[in-house]
Length: 439
Image (cartoon, rainbow, N blue to C red; front, side):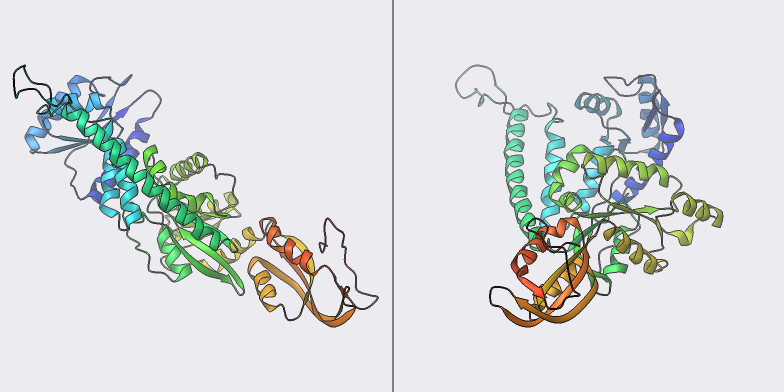
């Protein structure tokens, strides 16, 4: 059931209802009928008009349907009033998404996140169906505990929510520690609308076996893998949960520990299902969600996926002209993946700065580290002098490019080896106390 408000077009509501049908299919139910009503404002009691409610009731009786789903979030009062009239189970879009998340949750983390979101949703929607613990009439043995069942339920739900939040806080701390342990590599997160092909791209690039199904929300847990996108260029690539229009805010809050992979990434890869009729609207939804997560300013590579099923070559040509910096691929068929790797490397290295450092030749671990976080432009072996020892030994002169975020890793190296000077009148480098070793 969808409603067209003055601020929306009927086409937008129809597209949203079409997506709702996909959600229903993912949840394992069958759609018998769809309803749309033009309304000037939302009815505070029943969301839609009373006449439309009665029309739906008649269709329910005819079809023997036992479930009605609204495309927008309903208030507790609206849910209660509609259930009384329709006499069947009632869900809104948020409850349906939560149910899908609950079915697809596999790890303990995802199950905890989903349960928290469900309880947050349920806490405000308890109705007064339970009265067996309410105060009774006077007399011995007839006085209740002074608390109605709904109050008991709310208290128990509140206690469970506190427990789950504490558990997620512990998980968040563990994941933060894990991320710190791998902070020496560039972190790239795949983001996009649900079912855009992020997991398929992850499998193609990282040679993983992440579940990739042609259905909404196949991925709930983030998966991170180490990937070489070019010889000697290693990154950490993360697959994340997909976004969707009207995504409940409580889900974003509950999935904080998962979405922190997006928040703490260096580069975003926005995967777009270019074969979808409404891919531009899906792009807008993803961009809005990224703004809500305060990550919209991160360097981002647009990746138009599923070009093998695009309708016309003209459409692909127009997109290439409109988005000249984007990558165009088919993750499932391996089309354009080589070019995608090269474009991703360009984005990673776009803000690199050039540096020079002299190291003792035996510091191979340090040299290997620089290869991981930077790009070696030249490497020259020579004789050098250690000032405080007045000793000559073999050294290596590295001329490399590295991102500003890795300066904190390189600075200690420069400070540690700044006493090393090359031998010979024709070799020089800019070096001072504040900017030692930088070209």
